[in-house]
Image (cartoon, rainbow, N blue to C red; front, top):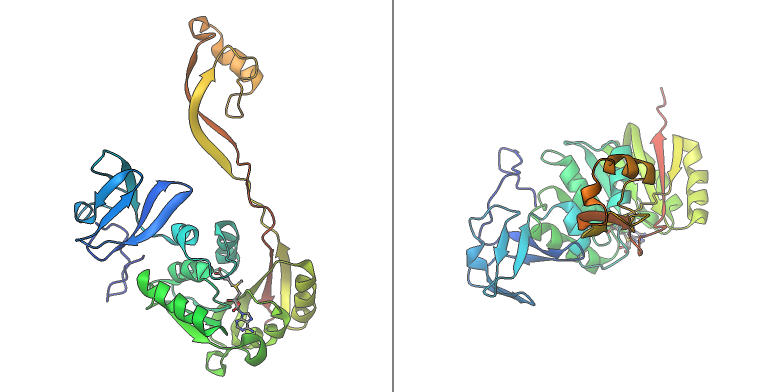
Amino acid sequence: MLPVDPNKKLSFTRSICDGDLVIVYERHDNMKALKVCKDSVLQNRFGVFKHSDWIGKPFGTKVFSNKGGFIYLLAPTPELWTLVLSHRTQILYIADISLVIMYLEIVPGCLVLESGTGSGSLTTSLARAIAPTGHVYTFDFHEQRAASAREDFEKTGLSSLVTVGVRDIQGQGFPDELSGFADSVFLDLPQPWLAIPSAGKTLKPDGVLCSFSPCIEQVQRACDTLRSNFTDIRIFEVLLRTYEVREGKRDCGQADGGNLGSLPRKRRQRSSEGNSAHDNLSYPSVMARPCSEAKGHTGYLTFARLKCLS
Ligand SMILES: C[S@@+](CC[C@H](N)C(=O)[O-])C[C@H]1O[C@@H](n2cnc3c(N)ncnc32)[C@H](O)[C@@H]1O
């Protein structure tokens, strides 16, 4: 996903090699992760694609099947991985993840603790944010989930940046060896208030904690616990409005343009002045309108900063 060479350098420009993970993109709502294997083929409704044709091409290339159908071969970024990973649990999506990375002030070199690991959706973005010199320690009490997450981090090439531990964080807290080392801690647990005292011990002074909870009652209990050792408590609910972009025919003569992508009426009138030859013509245009199935509430993100005791 993010090649880290032994000199701890990141490489962003790469061609596809045998054994690489690629994201096969048909449309924005139809993608899957695939390992390139020189003797294999991909067969879908567009025809047959030989993997050997992909090797040596840059990521992002459009490749064609035996029938002239096409797909794009994209580099497996954390953003795309979140859309194709196998859902073993509820996961965090890009809107929440972006806010988490910013408010937790995660930069290359940071040491980040997380629990639970779940499907590793957030962990993948945490790993990219701390690379190439930082580390993510993530814990889940569910052995099989932890094992599957490890396999995924091998697959995505992130395993040197992430350690997955099996541990009951609500019952036992984070390991003592990590006390005072964490730049930030992220909790996605059913009873986060049980893990907050231990999270406080692992944080460096001034470190930031974030807890994700779907229900406001969980947030209230977490805040009650946070008040003793943390300050600057903030709660966010991220509501994202997604627009669908597609090509269509725009009718200039229509009173309202017929879609949300058209210009406001006054501007349209002005912009078409002296352009009467185009009136009542329809021509291709790009239109945007809010997606009908946009996601609503996912959960609440509670952030708090460890008090510095002098
Ligand atoms: C909703 S999932 C986390 C999803 C993750 N944030 C993601 O983006 O993929 C919650 C995880 O917490 C784990 N969990 C629940 N209670 C736990 C505990 N006491 N200690 C450690 N992990 C726990 C569950 O096994 C589950 O995998």
